[in-house]
Image (tube, rainbow, N blue to C red; front, side, top):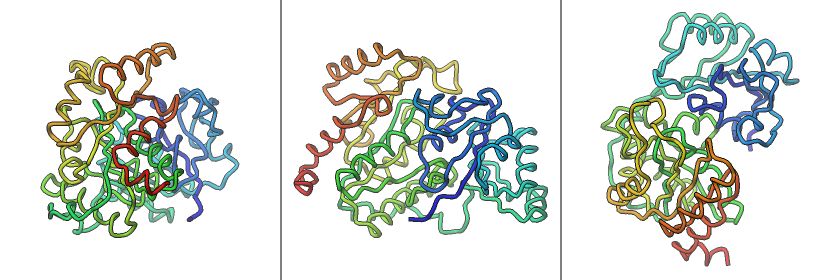
Length: 359
């Protein structure tokens, strides 16, 4: 396994919030980078794990980039832009910080739709400082123009999609945790990343779907799954969801379902969220209606519910889990607060050949 390289993540004023989801995800898990510091002056001095989940993880939050470079104790080589604003663009302050990072000899990892490698000023500065610019969402070559071909029907392992009722509800985190749990059992499990954060975390297979031309999204999803099948012949795949199927602003879930053809779905939901993230005038969908929509559109059963516990007390969380299990008659859990054992058992029951393999 390739050794992780030290990196700091910039997330000014948004760490632990919805628009800080890239930084949040990297603080929880990264297979490619060793995250040694988060930059957010509003939470300077705190532990990133404590802020996110109430459990320290040893990643310190710094006031600014200078403090981070001096205080991590590492020779840092990468600066990761860890925010995902709805605009998809950099602010003037963001650009200034990135210029300073390049002057400190840091390579830049950017997940936004605005590409640094399309801007003369950034290209020139990177050349002067002898550093690299990596635009994760940028189409690097013409190969990311595959139409759907039907190769998904040649993939013989089960595929579980982790969908949700909104964006930034924890679909990627749940995907990572379930993937690890299945791997720990001894099953050859592959996660297909579908967004910029999963790619930055180091997912071996996947593509940031929302960076592609609509005509090719389903085909590129299919291609990622088929390539994983041919390369690894996994026992099972986990497909990371994006947005939600009912969300008026995002279409990625449609293409994940069409291109990936999941055999079953797990739905992530924040019970206390009343309005769609970034859309304060639009109500959250009803969970029952979202499940019905997913099952009709995907022709696959929803086999579990995972909860995002934002703004929930422990007692509310426990009561909600019990209520959902009684109402929907499927396993329900919070994979960050508890575990995913009930979901794993449901998967093994639904696909008995997996359980037989373990036996």
